[in-house]
Image 1 (tube, rainbow, N blue to C red):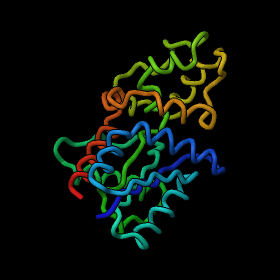
Image 2: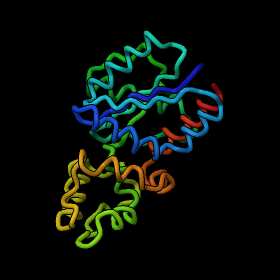
Image 3: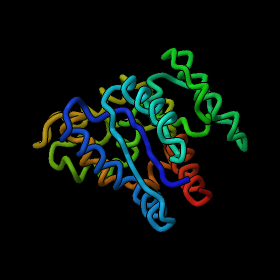
Image 4: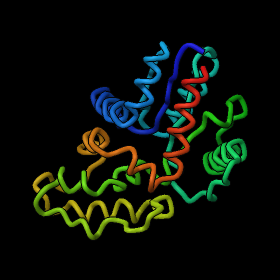
Length: 215
């Protein structure tokens, strides 16, 4: 294998918005990116806009770039059964089954272990580090309305958005907006805190590190 390419949902409709999301995710995944560089592997993170665009770009990459470890990373949108301990293949098949049923995607050409989910949305990663949110938004930030549960993947997506909006509404930066703020927050949040509260982020980053060193 000659490199890693991650096709990710998000980034809006404009090139500069996708570039900002790429920058944010590159910082969040700095450990994995640095390992890839140390192993002399290419590293490409591709924000695709909407989820169907990410799926199509990923499927196309499977055909035209088989020497690359192509990865799909999208929101789960909805709840998904908890991961089973020491069953990486089974957990991967569960992720694929979720997307096959929900989105009617054909992922039969893909290695299931290369399909990963942001559960239930990328904002779960962001609210995993309330200290960073408090510093970023400053005066007027209402920390105690953020989701309190340890496992943020159990928090419904509408609740994550609602609580994040309420926490930030009266700050100088204004209410959280994905295009306005997400990329900057991704550059600042602590990956270790996301691992603690978002199990499938832990799965994704652990798998990614292993895939890089094993390539």
